[in-house]
Image (cartoon, rainbow, N blue to C red):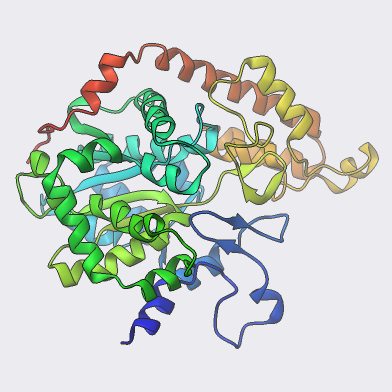
Length: 416
């Protein structure tokens, strides 16, 4: 396969870049890459089409049944409700677990703001569940270098933000004995093995390929061009000799689907390095308050609920900005019902209201017109105020010393 063919195969970041048999309408709709997410539809990204374009696999009933049989409990409601909807090689991970072959988790955060928002919590809530049910080690990469390269932020500021964001991540309840959080600035400079892994990846990927995958061009800085190898490196256990002692151990990466281009590149490189391809679990996007056409933005305080928001701020944001699926008049709403597919308050409840029966009752009542938009928003406000207040209480207990312990390179505890 030529470099151009590999680039085209690995890329496909824009859903419309498909075969010429697609309709003109299909070709101009959704854009999904690590820096841009946009849909022309009020219902948001067409995830079924995205699975086809990216070449991943849908999380189907067979996979869910197998997971539940192995972990001997129901899967997380993120999976039950299709919020984590796509995967790569999850069956391979489950087979390894059944055979008592070890694996580890890897996820990350790009620290671009002082406060994280609710959308940032999704992969960490799910990753904690995975760590708990499979009892496995976890590495969390803080890509402070990435945010320096892509944002108008200084090196020192992005480094500081990495440590601030680490406090929010730790507050999610990760097991300190099984979790290593690291700043790229700190760890790459101190770990010969991580840097060696990066270099091996870099040697396997050409400029032509990263152009096709990420849309880089001749004016792109060499820092951006080199960065994908940095995000790829934690996918391989050889980057963490202090944890795995040089053993080759497979990796499972829970992440939002916009990060998949990095790992398509990684999976293409892995066989050439004699290493295991990382497996992935992909989440849908947590929509902005203004609707599902785009994901939340840390730079727009009115696009999302932040983990630093007060109860009053949460109430104001939901009431003022949350896009409604209700009708224009009370009479019309009672007659036709609300549209849960576009209503942001209902979408948020699918993420954060754990009670399946209550969520279904809300869906039925809103769709029938019995439940009004104002009452739906009140339900969401109560749920979010509780979640944010509890998170703030846990975060207040995360001291600088606790952060240092999580970010110290060390042997992690696990049962193999």
